[in-house]
Length: 196
Image: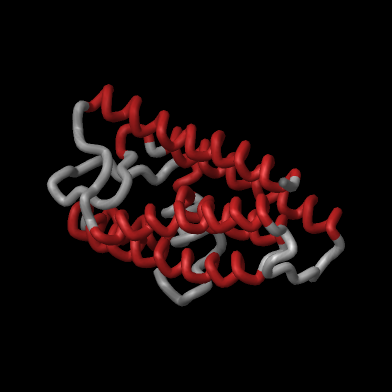
């Protein structure tokens, strides 16, 4: 068993623990459904579980499986740890900032407040961006080609969820959301895929 395995387990306990706590507390507070029952959310959750499972399996059983040494180990560790820290900071800011509007997947029959302040003034989807950062962190820590391929697939799942959410928010909030789209990028940096 490698030290990386233990780091990833600890990170998942914190990362998923924050997510679960937010869902439980919000469900108790509002009494409303928190998780949308749609295919995009279900497939993305299944993929996240797969990605973390593959990462842990490689780290535990054979860290050399799929290894591509692009940078020295200490540099990969430093970059990986920095990305894990960034992942947790963005996650916390996202979970706190969205307040009672937090949902897992789109719930068509609910209308929540559109949040455009805090971290949401810099990204329309910071929590999704935190998953992308997590993919990058694990891939960097392990320097693993399999995780890189899975990360690219994960981006596609996340992008599909975001596109569904954007359609819902446009239909629900109309011009207010369209104006917000012009101010905040879809991910973290200015829109790299030409989207608005």
